[in-house]
Length: 268
Image (cartoon, rainbow, N blue to C red; front, side, top):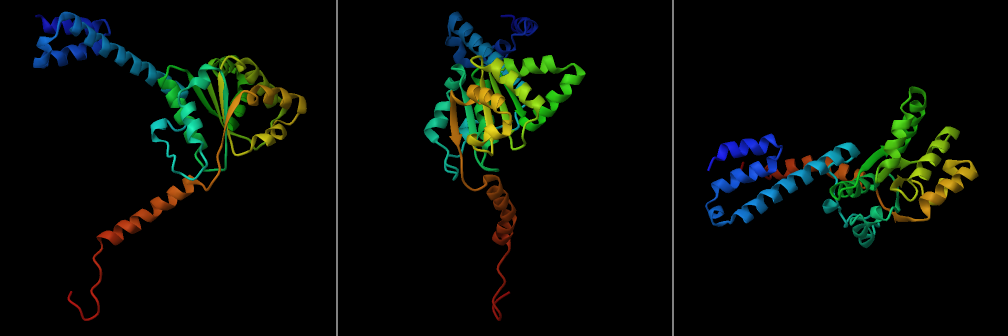
């Protein structure tokens, strides 16, 4: 059998997954017992898996998550932050994204809101959904600039067409008139067409004041809140606790490897 020409043809056709599987099967004695149909099935499975992985990696890069390595498998449910485990595991199925519903994550600084949001976003990328992540203060600044340099239409499409839009660190600054209008246009276009995840240190009952103008606030919150799941976190700062544990670790290690001083009069 002409092995090398076959592999070259697979590479030329961008069937790298099949080419890699072909090479592996050629080196395995057990593969000789496989039928042609079984060989082909294994090659196709490897190619499908490789393409799926590439699409996931492309979606993850496009999302530009703050915590790109966050994943639902690494969520610490033992942390003292009042995380509803049953609800979070339900959210991890991404059904809420398929249903075009929203998610509001609130809690004090350092509790892990952004990390949990990115973990859900990474799972969404795995499940084939497009994601766009943005810190709210930076996004509003970028929207303001885009009105003047001609980028607004393109940025607006990016924000409204993603299956999941994450607005991280909402508040506490009061929105300006332009920011209110931009946010209203974004949530209006996304309503019923995509899911929005918002993290904030502020409880949702204070968001009306952050938006400012009552008419805009009512319209925006009506589209964001009424069909949203909520994760209300509370507890001490996990970031601060882990920083303190990390700072204390070297002292512990030094104590563990430093021999104890002999007692006075004892052996040296």
